[in-house]
Image (tube, rainbow, N blue to C red):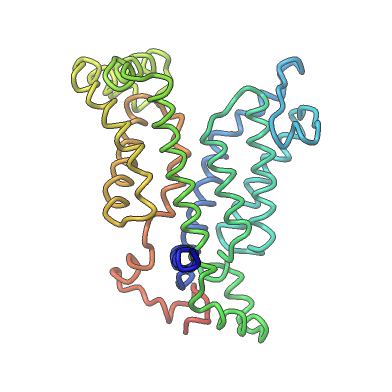
Length: 320
């Protein structure tokens, strides 16, 4: 029993706290917050209309329900909305990262919970909020950040960076992001099977999505003009295989955080599915694209591009 516990502990520590350099976490932070900021600016600003709804339609969820918060008026929402974009941009460039990531997480949680409490939103809002909080408690600002540049003269910070040159603190946030990402799609796959059964697997669900989304004008204008959804709906057997493939890919993401080959196959397939979904069925999950940044080995890409990880002025000086 003791050896079993020690084996589990060693495997746990190796998986979550494998010593890594800060680049993957830092670049993921930079791209995630930049994407979320621009997506919110062009899409979520329309959520202010929900602040105009009658209070009878207010159904608060956590944390709104916990604090018994009343619905925001339009001015309050605009302040919250602009604060979220501002702190997200600060987090992206790595300025006051310790504080900006936490403030972005707080503002994002309030903004998205407001949307869901106003009967708008989906599980993709929860995914964004969880990612925000993982970054809030990570050391993602130690590289590719303005913080790592302007504090390079600080003796205290130099010692801190030296101790973190290779650290498990850069590994666990990425692994946690991956696991939560996978849990979203695995739960979606199980939900389809549990609620839809064989009808979802081998029925006309995908075909109906194509037709409904097109005539509901849920697509972007490019998707409507291409008419790919209507074209695909003409092939019922292909749509059935599409439904079956969706379930297999979603359930298969369970293995992606733990096995490299599974990661390459299922995450690539899921990303292509998202792109195809955007042009054929709906643009409602485009914000989920920001979650894919955690799967990329950015350090490997930079090395392939002959990008000096040790001499560049952008990265933390501790690696010089």
